[in-house]
Amino acid sequence: MAGLTTHVLDTSKGAPAFNLKIQLFKINKLEKNLVGTFITNQDGRVDKPLITEDNLEEIEYELLFFVGDYLKNVNVDLDKRLFLDKIPIRFNITNKLEHFHVPLLLSPFGYSTYRGS
Image (cartoon, rainbow, N blue to C red):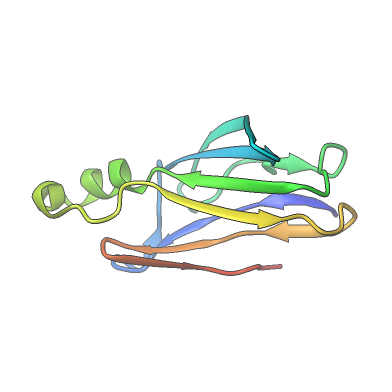
């Protein structure tokens, strides 16, 4: 099934990142248009696809992860040492008939991502 999904894992806790805000934008030349705002569930996932196959376009997108708010909530002593606040990930949808999954592996001082399946 085509579409776009994501999930967030907190590698410092070895658990999904619950209650983390994510925004999705379409990037069209110099314009950045908000597609939607989402919150991760207890599995670190969003309850439904960010974009379904009917609305997926072959265009550049950006996921903006509000990790600072999440990290401050789960690490009370991190307020003064907060390194990451928002993580933008820009990527291209190259075939709207495929499923694109963009996971985020997060710790208070670093992150990684990849194209998942």
